[in-house]
Amino acid sequence: MAIYRESTIVRIDCDPPVLLWSGVGPLPVPADAVVPAPAVALGGGQLISVPDFQQLIGGTAERLDFVVSGVDDDMLQLAIEEAPTVRGARVDVGTASFDEDWQLSSIEWENVFEARALTVSRPKMQGGRATRSVTLTIVQGSTRRARALQAYFTDADQRRRSADDAIFSHVAQITSGTSRRFGPSD
Image (tube, rainbow, N blue to C red; front, side):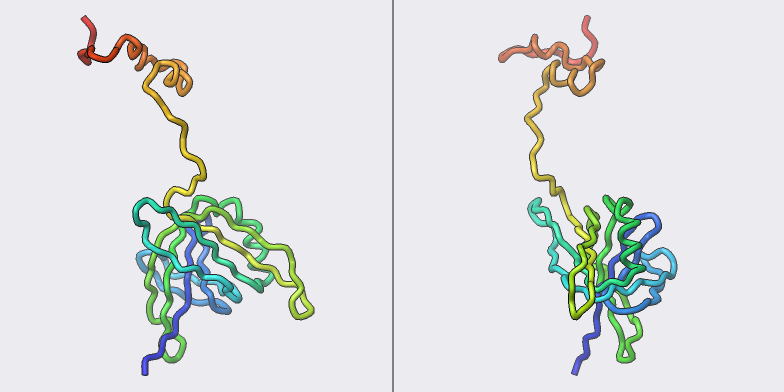
């Protein structure tokens, strides 16, 4: 009978890089294509939400939230201090496989995302003590909510972008049925 012992591992390429795994306690990780030097992954506590992700198909952007609950004070402080540096960082998500003795046997890096936000929740009472959670929002593709305004090749539009750029100054002279030879004017 096959035994599947797997855990989720996440590397955030901020300064300094952060390596987390969904288990408890530190996990030594060897160097590979994503982790440039041997490192120690911090146990994130109880991973509440590891969303399913898909490959980017047909321009559909994907926004996911990883939620880690029951974090200790060190992890909480790290999340608060590093939140501004995380935005825009590369995020690699993979699966760590373990052998029968729970020793790390391999890591398969499955997808690459971009970190959008790292937030810390307000304390919630659970079992007589306050617990907090950390949420990492990651995106793949363009997740902007609005489309850019229509742009035209007119002198006025170009001057709004760059006041001293006169590349479109002769566009008004071109009408339907006429053509202009490109290059220097005689």
